[in-house]
Image (cartoon, rainbow, N blue to C red; front, side, top):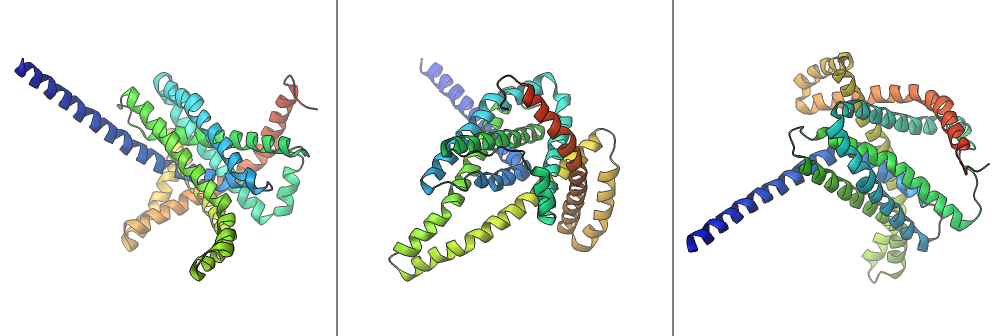
Length: 325
């Protein structure tokens, strides 16, 4: 009996070791997948605070919470099952979907660059795309729905990028666990950061007025002065990350489809930098090359999206039952 019990304990210990190793694998794969999706994550963090502007301070965190809840639903109830089904039924579709996601990132980033360089023309392009809403409650709902829709697109990119980084040999349940960890972890990271960003002014103001020490009040004033710059830097970094990551994904997709010329050209330019500056120089040139390609691709896509896809989408929405006049 004791031998049998010891054997059972040995089996349980072995299973526990396997489970622990699996958990480590899931955590490691999730970390790698999350890093690959960094461009979309930064973009998500940079974009979301814009949906909270214009509301009273007491509505900011509830709005962020509702958007975060919608993001979790997007990732776990729609995108996770879709990604797993894709990996099981049509794994060949992952690369083209990644390329499409990369093109979208390039378009979004290039559009922001275009708006910064030609603000009046960009405003004319975007005029009347969103109806004016006067009721505060309706405006809040519209903003939240718009943020959740944008989050759905960004989350789809994140989950597809994460799926594309996973080895094909990874067991099905581990893929599901990794994608779930990535989805929940990124949502907590993004919306935790968003909550801090949107409340930073209030925190700084409270510290500047009520801190008991001079250093505390000075810190509060420093936060108030720094936040506009933080938002600008965050917007710049998010735009740059979108263009760089999107360009790299699209270039890799071209190579997978038998068109490696762009990738080879960037690598050829990067080799002299590697000889002069080492691995850092080579990586920097590759990032710049991916970014330049991504910016050019995004600029080419702007007229296609604004003059073809947007009117077509508006026509489809207008034809749907219950569409507003």
